[in-house]
Image 1 (cartoon, chains in turn red, green):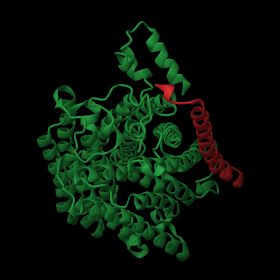
Image 2 (tube, each protein chain N blue to C red; image 1 turned 90 degrees about the vertical axis):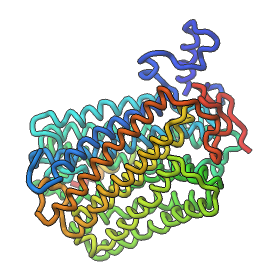
Image 3 (tube, rainbow over the protein chains, first blue to last red; image 1 turned 120 degrees about the vertical axis):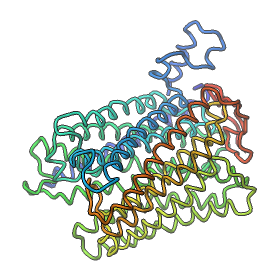
Image 4 (spheres, chains in turn yellow, green; image 1 turned 30 degrees about the vertical axis):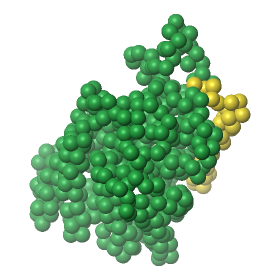
Length: 39
Length: 535
């Protein structure tokens, strides 16, 4: 099934996934710590 | 990704015949360990179905209590718990997982990919839903009962309630993590795994709507998680983010919650737009009118959804400039939404239309969602909203958007793709009966709630003044008719799976996406192992 994914696709997919995960974690930390530090 | 390959090879190495790798393993382990997008999509859809009936049962308890004035069946605290958990279960347990189920089934098929980009994370996204659902439902049985603040979890009330609130907060964290992982998977799949020739502007509109929805989810689910984390620390760790007694500001929670909450509304409706945009062209036997404008309208709605959150809180005390900004920004959303409605109607214009069950639900969606959109415009007007805020008019509005909008699209989509998914055809007569009973029941349940709201009946109350009695009675009758007619749907789906007659490869003459044109019915367990070439 996975044979359709060539190496370049796989690398791009991992980079895309990591960037999106970093976005989500970053937004969470900004929301919590902005208010934490603000109070 | 490589994990899926290992799982696949392992299975192959367990002494199966050469033919085995085309079918799933048997028994419970198939579902527990599956990395197959079709299996995971199926599990999401059944989970959503179960939660829909759970939330529906709560809704019917609410409507039973409101059938007559006075207190009949439940005490007021339990009534408030019912409205709260009904909302949470329907939003996070039914509507959202149902759309993720559709995404799992259809995104790889629509773009010609073999599976999702991260199949094991996909499995984890689904199985996280189970503990979250158990926490939400079990919260009814702890001392003090389930959270009773409304699904919006407003402080200071939410800070004062019992352990059920902590269970709800944990459930929301888990559901958020699941949604974010699902979204990462969907975006990565769409951006990296399209078949040769499947450019972005050739993708079926359902894929486009999910791409945009997944970005919305990644942007706003962490905001909700942040808000409920702060609620948790306010409750147990001595902070005062939202507690006025310690110098905090409850209004701040409203801002943060609705910064999540309004995009969440579009998270629940954009995939519905996608499903409707697949169904209407198929039954009008014409290509979708204005494909590019549909894509841009979807993106516009998503962007605008970030700047309208204030319309949920006009009554908290906001400067006139703020009220005007949020009012005009909200009205602006009617423009891209209008483009979509216009395009669907133009697609049907002079089409060779037939009205099988999916098309009936799609046309029902079009008529009733538009009513919900218009009542939204009414509520966007500040002075009107200040009068109607917290009345049944708001309840009527968002049920027209979420039931006859999101839910009708889900039902339409299930009828549309069931022949492809199961290889069997559902009963058309039962489907049509389901549609008409749903239409009558839904409108009887929710249209009178506009009148009740205009007359001043507040929401989230177990008892009401006598002048509201008659419309409440009709609303409850409609709700029970709508609720029980969904059992026809359940029966139709189950009997199709068990004993439906074989479906054709291209069951719907006008359907033109890859799963209809390139794959047999029933579909093999693994599809597009070799990517198709799209011209």
